[in-house]
Image (spheres, rainbow, N blue to C red):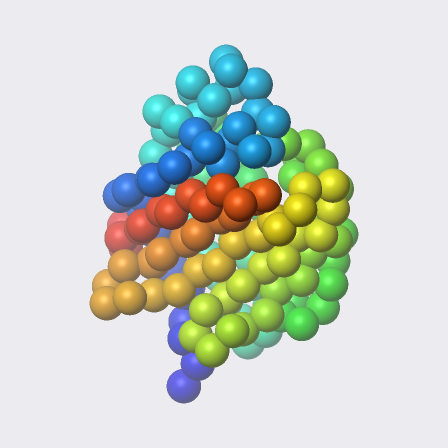
Length: 134
Ligand code: YOG
């Protein structure tokens, strides 16, 4: 049975988000607001098809993809860049490489116990978030 990340998840911790945002070139005012919010992840996993919503009082972000198929990602409302993104399973870790202007950019999700983990990385900076089921 493959891992199922589906569900509604509330953020319970957020490490190094400031560094990650700085690496993405997010301006001061936006960073101040962004680090106050506790986003919710709403994940729909249907075979290889995924919808991941990151919801907050400040901004929302939606990404839809099929595992193994590169897609055009526009990080609209985040750092507003275009990426060629590819999501694959790395054992039980769902891993995305976001090819574009920023080097070594991407994220990886996995479940450990009853928690959803997310690492987001950009140019050597790593932000680590944990979520629990809503
Ligand atoms: O998740 O890509 O689950 O897309 C990371 C924000 C902050 C906006 C959120 C609002 C990076 C201003 C997306 C936060 C900082 C700061 C809620 C994470 C950029 C701008 C949207 C993400 C993946 C994996 C799926």
